[in-house]
Image (tube, rainbow, N blue to C red; front, side):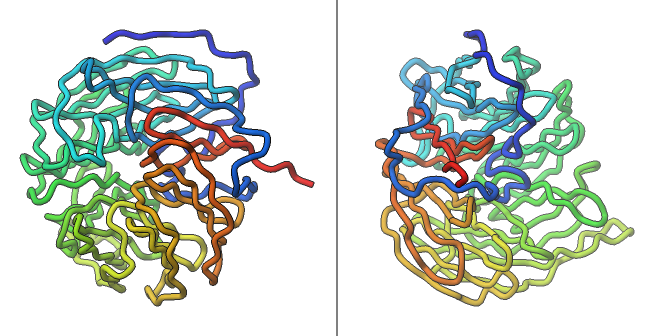
Length: 410
């Protein structure tokens, strides 16, 4: 590995941002109440920055810095980068040499997102010869590197780790040897490993869910459906095998429900909501009840659903968006925005926003009526979910970062 370091621009140290993992705190996609433009800003972007390579890793924000990843597939290099939220200046760039494998045309060699907390920045990547986890300090120095063994998947790799206390949670559902593992954030030492059956390779990011009994890790896969795991021990607390296809979008929580989706490229999708049970003391996994299911007519395959209040927004891969009751799955509205989508929707300032693969930001009104409020071009392919923090919304196209300022409060 080699590092390129640059002096950070002078700026006041802000409070830690609530978007330090893919899709923000609890992966809930909640960007707060600040309002952002819905059309291309007349004054232009706050700033733009070119990345060293290409990729689809979503940006994350921590302590006034943006972290993401990219790859130069011709040179056989991947990069984890850190930019200043204030002006887009590159603070550090970490270079990771390694093999480049074939992948789906909508995938890349840097599709998984970075996860960050006070202990450092953590990123996963893989080729057929191995699944790796890289750990860096917040100033860009390498902490540790772990190789978790061979990786086999039809469409390449796209996994993202989740942080839970002093653990890095790795979900490795593939066509080879599958497992969920917990690594020590300080050393990379494996604290536990939960063997899993293998089915269709999956790309869902683990969800760390709060519960009265303590934190739980929720993972989804074709072979196991929706599973709740004790992060301290790796014990399965509950599981419902209910996802007949590949799990790409990530699990979410809506009140007492855990929700997962599965599908394939042909549009055969299914969403399942299960009631999270209270774990028993006897150690036997429980089977949760199914609260509702939603079929291919509105269930997404790649974009992760979004909960706002009592509404569940389902942004489909082919540009059909639906709003359903988060408790029952009953349809409230459905509308077509057009385009294809791999990114996931977020809620911010009373709106719902997502970015098409063609790089168009589509903004809808949050509520019980389908209403398109605006469209904004980014000028480049985009399959990454935006991040929000410190009065800025950050987009990541295939090769750039772009920052949008919140509107001034009257």
